[in-house]
Length: 172
Image 1 (cartoon, rainbow, N blue to C red):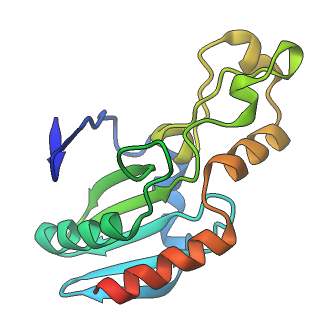
Image 2: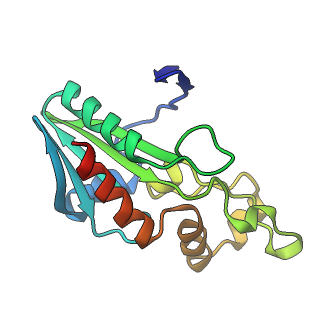
């Protein structure tokens, strides 16, 4: 359990190298958004999930840049905190954090009825490229197009992402 402000946060752990995003993050970063001491926040070419990448040589700088991003995230109506998923790891002498800002907690198909229903609620592993369904029947029927739709529903859209980047720049 970790605390950000007054809210406790739970972070599940996993094995490094399991997620496709860990292998592709270098190729997906494009323009730096801001820098804070020895940390840089990067934009990515991934326009479906809009991950933000923190790359730092000191963990304290990565932590502070994360706080800046966290404070720039909007809190959706009915929520107590911003919605996001986070992947973090150390690679040689760098700390890497991939933040996936969210617009919604669950996609429409989660609440659908009948054949349209998919029991899917993307978490960090899903954002990292390994989509998990708790039910075998959903695993058997889910398509790449449905995954793209799910991600487009739960992740920030282009306009919201652009506004987030502007708020981050104003807070550094």
